[in-house]
Image (cartoon, rainbow, N blue to C red):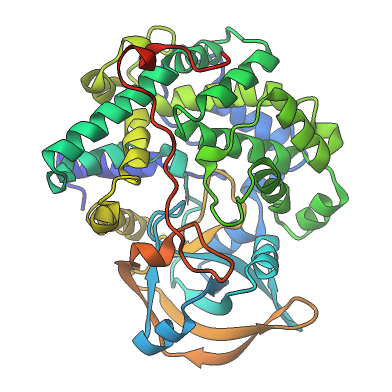
Length: 466
């Protein structure tokens, strides 16, 4: 397996997109960074209250045990699942897995991880399935980090751009470059900060907020950095209670998202997440007052480092690269991960994307399943933070599955009530079944299109307010 150079590169891209908080392995990084991945790992693991949970938590321990795992999945399509006997997987942060949350077997019933209890409280229009997955082999503690999938996105586009019309392809590239040029002054500022040339935290945060609408990927990075800050630094009673159970506190970042963006419960779209400094301070203060003062400086330091480490090829020098001078071909060679993230997000708002969805996303799914099977991963999980987002690899050759419809008792525990004859299958569900935006009854309601920077000279200007 992975004998050819092309296959080896595919494996390397997927391996780079997985994080193992129990390992000392360091990924290659561009030169010139003021802090290394190892520096940040030591800081996060050993200098924060929640740091020990990165490597030692109930989910990772269950994944690496080799024994049966119990997971919960919420669905609006129980009748279709029952009729077809199949469970299709979806794209998203877990790429090509059935999105679930862990369950912990206890004598009275199956106790949901705090992410699962949140889903049960907020997705009242859904039914809950309990899935028992037996991998029959130990898995590594590698979790997928969707922020590092840029090279995969770019390679998929390059291999399958024949599905696009010439006009679509031209428009896609033009829009991607307009976004990058509009954001370039701030992207270069991020690189400078990553080399240690620190911008004061207040103007940095305001410039970040102003740039996200031009370059939506920064909204995802911004949100994940703040989620990390909250989950690892919180000392609230609620957080301590979850920590005693071996869990990071998911409610912190859920509150952040829903308070920051109106309607986030219907459209969880992080391209809309861009609070400026004053707004950020108020948001964090409302969640945990003691953390408000340090949020902006943490965002500056952590986001700048992650951006530089993710965006540029390891062969590059962070202090020498300039986004303001780059064209599509130069970015393909020297910043393919960043370009891939931009292409991926622009692709999703093409008029024909509902027809193109399976062509592009199923191609990534096949690679993901191949990588997971090579690594004996039956239950991939979100690895930027092991927050409890875990899935089922439907293509694992040895794993066995059982599925039940479950009911929730007054104590919040799940109880299987009806076993279903269903099997996870290696195929992505149709797009309309997986859309993140839903109405009050759980029906898909369609995408939202971010504003596109004006073409021509205005695309080179600094973002408004910077």
